Image 1 (tube, rainbow, N blue to C red):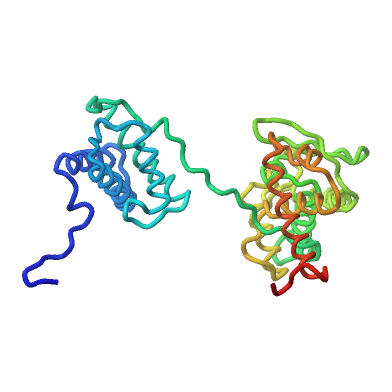
Image 2 (image 1 turned 30 degrees about the vertical axis):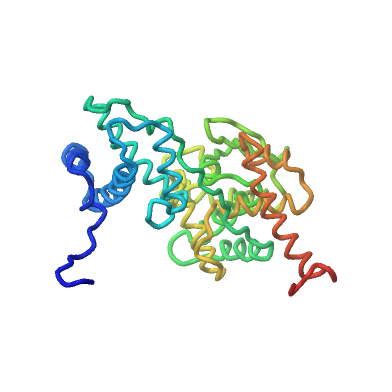
Length: 329
């Protein structure tokens, strides 16, 4: 650095005066009228400075932006073409949300000449990922851990409940809200079926296997009556220690305790059992359409995510077993 040269200016220092004024007006609006925290405001400032710097470099007036220019900026964010670090889809979507807020503010203040151009720009698609499904041995270890009584009042009754809950989560692929929402009449032990209330209050009937039914029967006979005696009467199948319907949070904790006792990963959640259910069905030869119906997915596209998990598993088997799979190539 030559003598007398100052430090390189930051992005914010290079903003045009008018852009800096717009930025401060919007951030003041967020702080005063919406009460956002200092950390949130800092994140907004960082995203908007990068956006306004891009507009300045392209000699674009923030009041005259069109959707194509917002889209071009978004593409530059993903690639780092604006001089900043490339952003993943989730981070770029967060930046776009900040920009949408700015343009909505300018439109509401009637200072924009183009309305809100950002509302026509779709957010980057975030990659859809699935948690790693459990192996069958891991599922069995989880179920056995849930069945072991702990300490304290009603420990045996709660263990019977926990085993039945996990057997159903895995045995019918229920969402946690669907499992905790089950009533006594929703389990038809004669027809070996359960009625689940899914998203949008849509109902579906799913088959229940022998092991899940046996666990439910054991809980209804030796566990639920003692739990129910602590409450005022409820049709809920799964009850908490106070005799009221088991909450989603409490059910989540049941899974976490069983995972810890079974010495499995701490990332296991109730949804892991649903993922494992779907994956094991596909690995066993079930077709995607049938699994879609069992899971209650509105679109088969969602169910097809599980086929990738199955393909990855088969690829590993192939690579390890086939003499010409190219191991070590």
